[in-house]
Length: 575
Ligand code: DGT
Ligand code: CA
Ligand code: CA
Ligand code: ZN
Image (cartoon, rainbow, N blue to C red):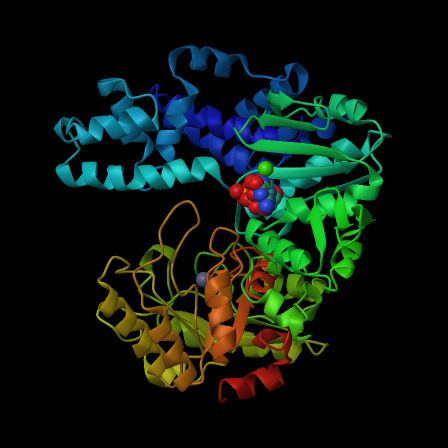
């Protein structure tokens, strides 16, 4: 019983309880407990085993502790099973619809008997939903628009979630002695922001032993298909994992084939054909002679080498520019996490962050960064206790003091995440912005405005001489919210003309800019800044996801501004 599973069970329990109108305090306890356990570094199961009292952990009360014990001892929750007799699990999908809260979802279930997204879609189309009390025609239209987002969320999981799953699978498969090599292929290996299913590749002589072992992975709920060398399973969260077992001489060829993308492979196969060769998941074959001859397949590099091609990093195998670059010997040297020197977007307890300036700074030192910029929200974001000019100036004074007292070269920069107001213009006075080291401009409100209006607001911010960068430029939240309607090319042109930077927000649910926009920015010569937008210490670890996305955008360390020390970066923003 791992922490992830305990946490997910508690969160699911809370959601299911919503549909039965249970006590909200109980629900909150389960939700908080679930979140805390998700972030808990130690295994709850081993804490229990060692006799530790779980209620001593922050935020874990008696009811959550009891559920943890029951889960670790019996593998399930009696209460959950009873609930599932009354409420089908598919109702949880209704909660994935943006802006449809649990209360409204419960009304749909209780009044109309709606149990899943399909039934909800039909009810909306038949105009039944608008007749419920508390629902209007507009609500119905919103729900209808949100169903496709919810359905897509069911089909693809965030890369960061797939990554954790891959680690658990790797640990599990590592216990089988017949496994010689293991790699994950597909979109996961290419670092795509969301992953449809996980493709696992194993080198082994004994595929049936490997499959038997795979079948004992604790998160599997059903086996979809099992053949001689291929097996597909479904996990608790409905996610699919494909396993393929291949002999060692074909491992590299299979890895190359199943990593894709399909389009990259089509291009590679086309090249092979021209050279009198053939490629498939077993290897590269010379077809020029009388009889076809296997010539390579052990490693991916062997496969590419046989075709007189360099090795392609998986993140750029999308048939965009990589074959053309290879031809000219111009493949980019992709950025790595160690290249990052500073992080220029993060929050503290002054607004909606969970840690102090000093705590964020020390955590950044531990992560070997040379500088950070504190960028709390501005006053427009009242919900997060955003800073007005006075509080902002006071915070900067504090930062000056901390820097002065510091004994190393680490620098804390004075910044702000300043809202771009709905009517255009910045939320903080220019004469204050002028004193900042780094000013972020962000759209948080008025996201549904027409294209021209949003575009003009962002361009307006880029034309402000004190602004350094626009954060999360399209505002999308993966599986949750579409990007706002904005003319990105016009925005990039304004960034270029005003020598401004654009953010790649590393939060795994944002990853904004996306890969295609990153490549566009690179081509236009606009520097990208990869920031975590951390709201707590652990958030600083999100840098890895941003770097992965940057690699998909074909960015090198040179293309990313915050690989430079602050002195050099300062010049880039004209300070
Ligand atoms: P996903 O799972 O939707 O996030 O995306 P992928 O890229 O992981 O796609 P998937 O799982 O269907 O297949 C994994 C890789 O296997 C894919 O990137 C390329 C290769 N592949 C699968 N089926 C075919 C096929 O019919 N033709 C070719 N050329 N390649 C295929
Ligand atoms: Ca896949
Ligand atoms: Ca697959
Ligand atoms: Zn932020």
